[in-house]
Length: 116
Image: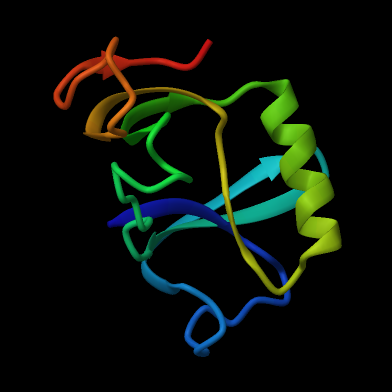
């Protein structure tokens, strides 16, 4: 599983506390701030459809996302507060349900979804 991430200015993505950067994509200017992006290998989230925690939820694989002014503002604040981290980016997306909790009746595995 992979994640698009903004790489903090003090981050060394090769050390064990950080996700492994699979592929650096380059830098983007956000005003006067240059932000490096990369695709990071991450573990699939643990999801157990019958567990108390997950039975009312679905697990979604993000297929496409967009970025807006709010994403940019949140990213800049998070990079300032967590300069040694790899941070996920983007909040608006479309995806596909890959698992569903046992109480979920309106969605099924394979359904295409977007957040509201």
